[in-house]
Figure 1 (tube, rainbow over the protein chains, first blue to last red):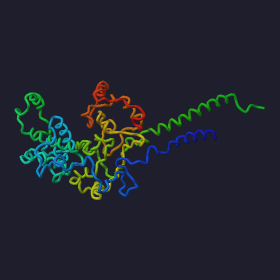
Figure 2: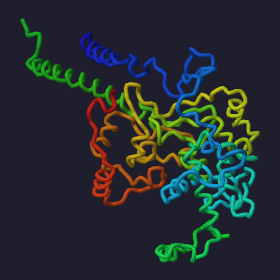
Figure 3: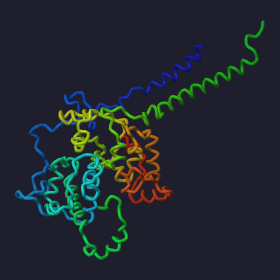
Figure 4: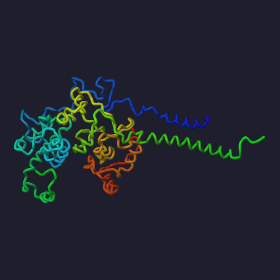
Amino acid sequence: MRISSLAIAVPLLLLTVSCRQDMQDQPKYKPLGANRFFADGRDARPIPAGTIARDELNDTDSFHTGEANGTFLDTIPLKVDSKLLHRGQERFDIYCSPCHGRTGDGNGMVAQRGVKIPADFHTDRLREVPPGYIYKVIKNGYGAMGDYGDQIPVNDRWAIVAYVRALQLSRDATLDEVPPDQRSQLSEERQPQPGAAR
Amino acid sequence: MSQYFSRGANSIARITIFALVVALCSVLWLGYLIVRSPYEMMQNEPREQPVPFSHEHHVGGLGIDCRYCHTTVEDSSFANIPATKICMNCHSQMWATSPMLEPVRESYRTGKSIEWTRVNDLPEFVYFDHSIHVHHGIGCTTCHGRVDKMPLTWQAAPLTMEWCLNCHRHPERYVRPLDQVFSMDYAPPPDQIAFGKRLVREYHIQSLTSCSTCHR
């Protein structure tokens, strides 16, 4: 009797040897971790007042503001190539398409569900705004649209600007404007896309 | 004087010793199984959250990309929980008076963090980097499951070391094309192993299984 209860108790005791969790839960700060030491309960500390920015602040030049001498930049300050446009397309689809729609006409899923319907990119007003204007709207928001400066880094904002321009051009482009070597590819892909029809 | 023990007692004694060893091992084995069970790992168990956020609605229903909210997943080891501001991009207008979203509005008003419960919580002796995985063709759903079908979020994988190593030893079984990493409904091709081996070469994926890869 005594031996059998010992036979159960010893293994059970052995099971408890790993019950300390010091390695599992180390006393260190983690991204977005909770912290009872600080009044706001966060591991992440705000930057102390008076901190001087090094290296990355650069938020006053035209590349970062979209403006020069009080007017919007009328060019995209990056080399606009297919790589930039594809990046812009990807980022546009992530951050902008929920409201603006994949084609930029303002019928994104979220817009359909109740936020203020955003402006259609394919209007004369928005076709004519300078790139710096679009950049600034991404960075600072506009009307009911919140700012996306925190979600989209500077280069990606300009990539999106380039892609918005491409979307606008594509709406009214004729086949003659497409480089001759890509025309056949275009007519192959010309099947009507659901949602793109107007 | 009669014998205290019958002839059979020898056998009973042998069987008892043998049974004791078996019992001891079984208890240890059972403990091992329990410690690694989905129950103990809290796998497939929706977590209570301050706001009943539904990935099913936001990802599956609205088609919002993972990166709209988890903005750092491509650049950082840590895939961030979005700032309250990101929720408010839409919810300043939609469901703007819903009592369910009051914790979000309160956080936005006061600057106080929403205290979400962590769902995929690795032990802190494990180093894990999201960015390297998404840049080498490991899809979100490979580890996180079909998040677009989770009304409340749960941990889809066991997150045991065995599970990590399973992929680190055989990345060709799980790797997918880079443009499909954030896709929810990606299905591997029938010839995944051959296809995977090609991607492993193309993306320069190494089978990293040394201790210090993850325990640094």
